[in-house]
Each structure stands twice: as C-alpha cells, then as structure tokens.
Amino acid sequence: MRSELLGNKDFLAGLLFLLLGGFAVAVAAGYPMGSTMSMGPGYFPTVLGAILCVFGLYLMACGIRAGGSNIGAWGWRPLALVALSIVLFGFLLDRAGLIPALFVMFFTAAAAGREIRVKEVLVLTVVMGAFAAALFLYGLKLPYQLIPGFWWIS
Image 1 (cartoon, rainbow, N blue to C red):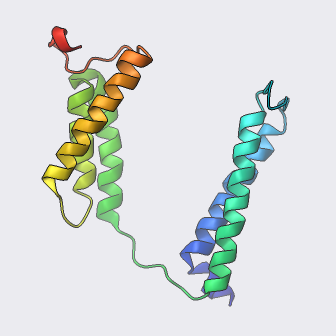
Image 2 (image 1 turned 90 degrees about the horizontal axis):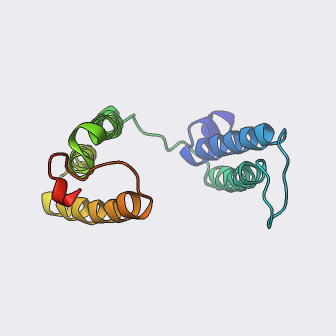
C-alpha cells in the first residue's frame, strides 16, 4: 500500500499542497493577523495557506481512495518549453514590448502541446494582449510599451 501511494499523482499533489500550505501558515504565524475588516500582514498568507492545506487533504483522500499507481513518464519537452516561454516573456518585455513578448510566450508555450493550432493561439494572443494592455498599461499605468518605437500606440 505504501509504494502505491508514492506512485499516485493525486496523493503526491495533495501532499505538496499540504506542505506548501503548512509552510505558508508557519511563516505567517510571526505576523499580526488582524481581522477581515482590518487585515494584518499575516492574514492573507494564513488564509491562503489554510485553503491550500484543506485542498491538499482533499486530494490526498482522493488519492488514497483511488489507490494504485498512475504516474507516467516525465514530459521533459513540455516542461522545458513552458519554462522557456516564461523566461522569454521576461526577457522580451522591456526590449520588444508587451505585444511581441506575449506573442512569443504564447506560441512557445503552445509548442509544448502535441499539436499547435495557430488560429487558436493567435486569437488567444490578441485577446490576452488587449486584456493585458487595458489592465496593466492603461488601468494600472505600468511603464511598459505595447511595441517600442510606435509612440502612437504606446
């Protein structure tokens, strides 16, 4: 039974959530909690950590109930491409602007899948580009450009 649980992805994911939530609660224990109306610095990490712990316990219970091993082989290519897409976004944001950085990020991450649907990724890029521009550039007034050099759209 013990080796079956170590090969069960639900049990392991639940254990990870439980450990991360417990760590968040432990770190937040040193800060004042406050109340819901007047939150202290320890309120949010404590609540979030507790939610992670409950979710982790639920996943662990699902894994115990299902039993058996259900972990497959690691997908190194998708893992590498998704990580690369995040790194490329961070690298390109200041140099190429928000829209080109999003374009590269979405298409690199989409290449991690089994098949790339170019039209869907392009629509996602346009929608997320408009949302990101509205939220970050115009709403929050962050100092990024949509596309450097094109002053009339930045």
